Amino acid sequence: MNSKRQAVFLHTGYRTAGTWLWSCFRKLDEVTAYYEPLHEMLATIDPLKLASSTADSWRSGHPVLEAPYFAEFAHMLDPGASGIAGYEEGFAVDRFDNEAPPDAERLERYVRGLLDSAHRQGRVPVLKFCRSLGRLAWFRATFPEAVHIVVEKNPISQWQSCWQLFAAHRNAHFVAVPFAVLALNRHVPLVQQTMEALQVKLPEPPAGAGPQRVESYLTFYKAHVATIAPLQAYRVFLAHWLLTLRDAATHADALFDCDLAGHSPAYLEGAERWIHELTGLRPSFGSAQREPAAERRHGFEPLEGLQVHLDALRFARLLAANGGVAADALVLWTSKLAQATQVMAFGAAANWPQPQVPAGRATRMVDVALIDGEGIDAILHAELAATRAALAEVKSELACVHNSTLWRLMKRVRTLRAPKLFRRARRGTRPPAGKAPFHSPPPSGSARR
Image 1 (cartoon, one colour):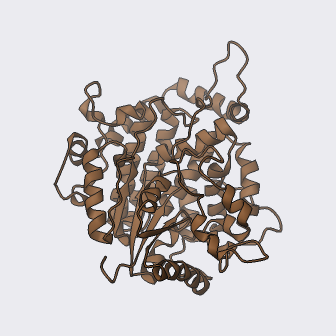
Image 2 (tube, helix red, strand yellow; image 1 turned 90 degrees about the vertical axis):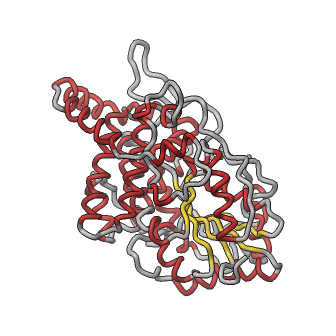
């Protein structure tokens, strides 16, 4: 490996298949793979909790792992106390102010301790973060010797994984996380603008919770999400999604697309090649899985979700026009929102080229500049033929629907009924006979990794 590139940082969102990607690196003999070094659990973890935190200890949907998630941290457990030496709970708070975090010196010292520990064993450290995307610029500037790879996924597929865990298995964590993160960053002007554009209204944080008390915020918002409609929660999720990917196209060495990874063998072969060129490592991605065959729910009607996507796209264009973000960020946001819209409207299967799906519905998400032109299969060819016509077509259809009297009446009824039906779906109960539900929980089964 290039002497100037002595580590690999995987910057991932929640439920993006980042754990699967990290596990591919973990299998390599020359790698020490650290799982979520910023996770709030590390503040209180002990040997028993470390040993019991495995992929099959909860409905994770993660691949089978040969060791507990945090096994590589075992030597850093503080004797006679709980928690990983050098870790502070404040590290778990992602930030969107584009400034060095207030605990920057201690955070750098902690992460460098992980790198040094791996290097002393003659191994390459691979760190899989899930709370770093807002601080991507700082991580890139502070650790220039590392290869920084952002792991991306379209927002509706990501949300479906979060929603399934909540609606089917009563795990509210991943639905509540965006609420907590936005609340902890509500003082940042860009966060305020994003929430306004997406019509996000957050209740005040719990009284007495300090600015670094991640667990307190999560507990508060886990209870809150059970009282609101799924569409409201998705607006918060999408606001958080936009903010986390603001710097992905400009401050990462590469983007790994987990949507493509589950469908295109050519993409996987190309990814193995460019990752080797960047890092000197040769992970195999042959274990990539397609989306589940059964359609997955998202808790609201596609037309309602489309309106949220249009709000996000309108705001993204405004930011780019005002110089608030780079043009590359707009390209990334737009392409992923277009893909998410088609997944939401036509299902996961319809999102990819196949005989029964009109060519006009093929995903438009990969910018031609990001592909080297080698090993293009049918799926990548459809990607490269991209235009943003998908959003334009459904936007005109939405305008016609919104102008109808029936739509306005339906919207009023849904607004009144949604919170009650949301709670019913979470409990797994059915509506009274003869009454069709506004949404229903997904079928049980493993969640997306």
